[in-house]
Length: 95
Image (tube, rainbow, N blue to C red):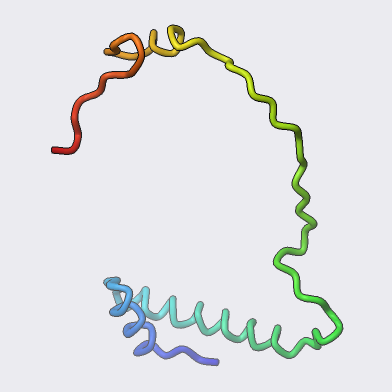
């Protein structure tokens, strides 16, 4: 399938992109090549192949959650530029 320069310009307009004539020519060729490749892929017989979301088997390793306190409040608050003993004090950002 051939993508014309006018179609590329229309797509660029819809995407709010400013393209020079050289880029329009380049994208026209590249998009045409992509669509030709997709047409080739659509010719492949895939009726006996089950759909996959990925060709790689993704397994999730599980572990037991263990709750523990890694740092004491005093240790964490030592990094604060300003604190009140329990919380960080930060500048107000919402009026």
